[in-house]
Image (cartoon, rainbow over all chains, first blue to last red; front, side, top):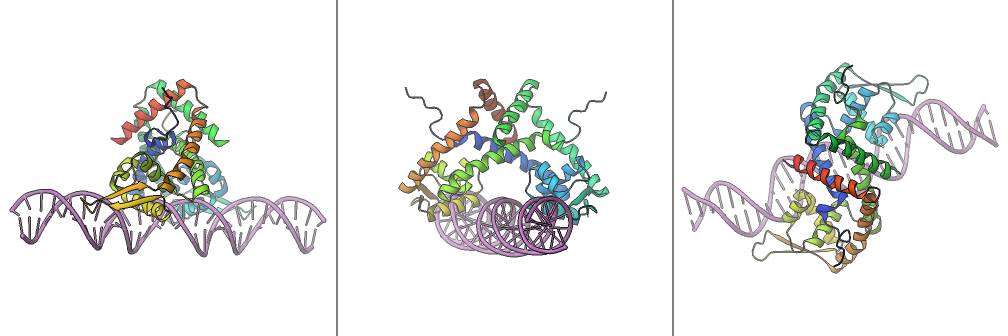
Length: 149
Length: 149
DNA sequence: TTATTATAGTTACATATGAAACTTATTTCA
DNA sequence: TGAAATAAGTTTCATATGTAACTATAATAA
């Protein structure tokens, strides 16, 4: 009997497709949380979250931390500035480099969204046992290290 | 000592973000395979793969199988028809319903891409032990069932 | 110096995407 | 019947996105 495994591509069993399907549903659910309440895009949200954790960094550093390309970062920052959620100045030492920070309003909004994000993450984790959560962490780490090469 | 877990959002540890990061890298690598060789978009590829497995289905059924919305399906089909990879007729019983099939050229191209996809998937699985592969399968299934509700 | 190269960020252009409106065909049921 | 509702696909429009070109500043080196 021929070994039938892994010689035909069945979409529903194909790992990249399954990952992508799961990820897209999760991302869309989360995006609804901040977009409906605060008219924030996914890119803007990512920059916002990153600035909350890492204040005073530049757009380029933001791009590294968030794995976004510089155009997406630039647009997200402009959007956040237009909405009054982020304050941007240019460094006096190097006038090319931006220095970014959340405004008071940006912090307020962020602290309204953050617990909702965490709550959703917890709702995902909660359907897994503690052991499974550890497995997931380990698997994601392994795969990510691999694909980053 | 305060419990520090899960009360602050750290992007690098946030499950949805980690999933999305991993998924995007994998999807981009795969997309390069078919887009560079055959000028096929990700949507087109998904429809192509699905039609190979499920011939004679309609655009709407394709959308269900691939979890794509009908506009994306419609565009993918048009692209594939323009490239001569897919043949579309309308059912004689219900003239709204399309009946889709790969052309000979479509089959040929698909069978050139398919092994490369599988090879890449195997390269991912290979960095995991058999037990870990089973864990991954199980975790993805659990999470997907959950988010599908 | 000052010409060259590199870096940070923005803009422009072409393409991709999603939501809603639209067209045509079929079904429902008063 | 035949009007209303539903269904399959397509088109339109407004946005989102990625690549490449561009501007301004800083670093390098001849």
